[in-house]
Image (tube, rainbow, N blue to C red; front, side):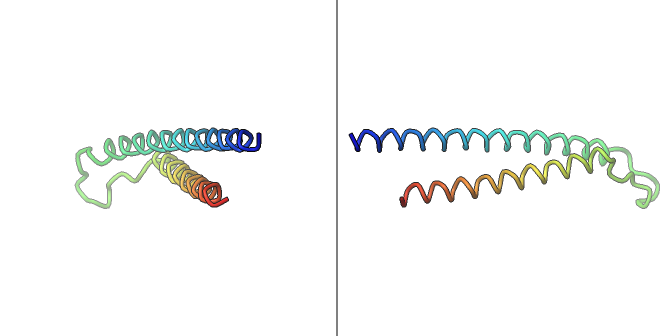
Length: 95
């Protein structure tokens, strides 16, 4: 019976790891979309005909700034989530 309980516990832990991985993947997908939006906005701005003097190049818009900040924040959250998952995985394997 103890062996059955242990395998049930292992199954539960495995399901938790899978759910965490799915959550991390979703965050990565969101960060990827934000980065693609940022790339598109930057491409549109930087591929315009250049002004007569480089000092007149249009600066990043507030939307570009927001996309950049959101992308960075998403990537930071993903990075921290991955660290937590790795720590939990190592503890699961050792314990």
